[in-house]
Image 1 (tube, helix red, strand yellow):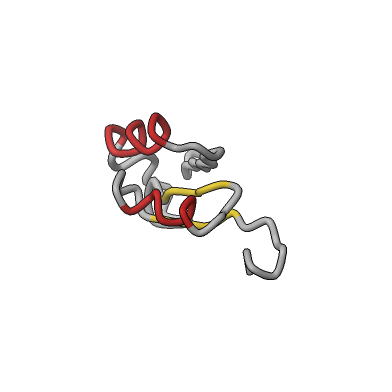
Image 2 (tube, rainbow, N blue to C red; image 1 turned 90 degrees about the vertical axis):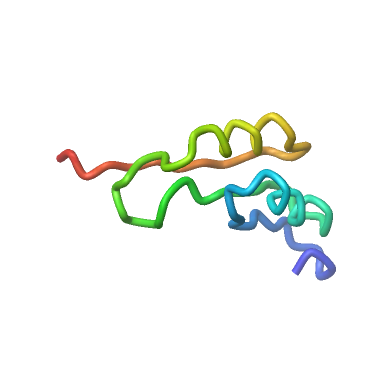
Length: 69
């Protein structure tokens, strides 16, 4: 999709090494999974997430939800 001119914001692992792959292929943002989608578990590995944010050269989008309604 990047080659077709789309601005891609890609989900990725919260692994600080692998999270650079979307940047390398031209994504405009990365979205590391802080926990399973719709699990309501919050941040499982805050240290990994902080490393991803510190090292990223593109915006990092993180959505965190909970089930305390």
